[in-house]
Length: 136
Image 1 (cartoon, rainbow, N blue to C red):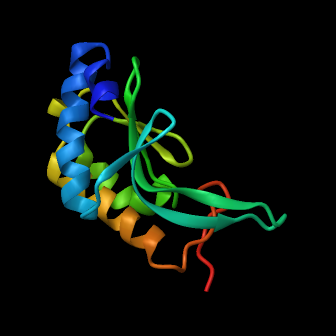
Image 2: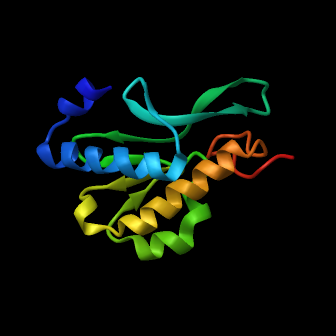
Image 3: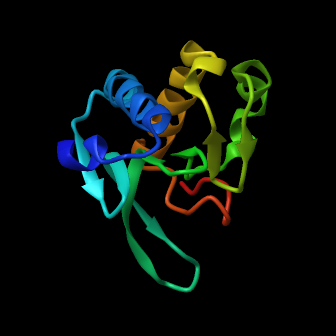
């Protein structure tokens, strides 16, 4: 994994990845593991209504050229209150895109990551972001 981070370009993305390694470790109390190109922390099991199921990182990020992607598999809408305080970002259904961590509030980002990780590892969230909601 260390080799992957060392190869990230541009340099700003590599710097941000280093920051996120520490932030995610604090928020999840997990060690990072590579899931393809995603730096993942912990796991959760999901199941679609169709019966398809699998495992995914409970928290994770990917340093991409255009932006760093923070994965929120329980959906970004869950964090609307905190996203207002975060700083410059864009979103997708389950993705938070950050172009420069120096421009965002890292304390708020850590809260988002921690809440998402807790939700996904509680055993009650078994869907992917686009399916939404929890199951008992």
